[in-house]
Image (cartoon, rainbow, N blue to C red; front, side, top):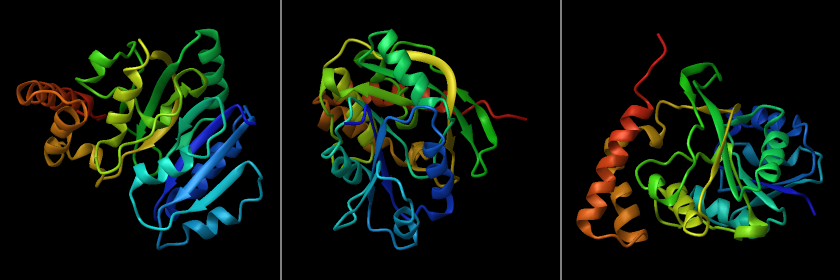
Amino acid sequence: MAEVSIITPVYNSSAFLQETIQSVLNQTFQDWEWLITDDCSTDNSVEILRKINDPRIKVNVGEKNGGAGHARNLSLQKAAGRFITFLDADDYWEPNFLEEMVTFMKRENAELAYSNYSRCDENLKPKIEDFRADKEVTFGNLLKTCRLSLLSSMYDSRRVGIEFFPEGSKREDHVMWLNLLKKIPVGKPLPKTMAKYRMHASSISRRKTNIMKDQYLVYKDYMKFSTLKSMYYTANWAFNGFLKYSKLFN
């Protein structure tokens, strides 16, 4: 049984998939399994994945296109590792990511941890300043802004169980983290930059005005807050989202 389960959804990711694969194979920590679910890609992503000769990498092809949350859930159903972490098919880990995170989790007796990550263009060149893991994360402060990024976070499934993604929400990662933080008091920061996030021009995470309604439903439908309370947290999320992406490099 591997100590770490890596969860990856794939959909038409052939342009960047080779770099992502290499970033996992280059990890200094090698006790992992990688559960990849292809969400009915129409490019050659599956062909690329099936060429990898490594028994730790387990590729599943979904029967229908159900979105990233659905693909992650299919992989999570098969996850056997103690530590759960996520890597999208176009993102990148530095070679020390898993080693540093697992060591930190054990040393700090943490149930959940997250690190800094670089915010890059499609060529992995810095685009805006690094996102910094500089605060402990609680259910209360995660309501106002989602500080946890899938590619730079890890949780201990032995202590908190497997947390699945809600299917149907376009903000499934935020809902998942909130549900997880209902179970534990705090997520701990590791202030080291060990991952790279590709900021695509069309990335849904940056089209804030287009997903205000989806974010409102995080609070109204999934957290079961009142209308007024849901509007309050949506406004906080929008303001903090603006600050998150406002400082561009010259």
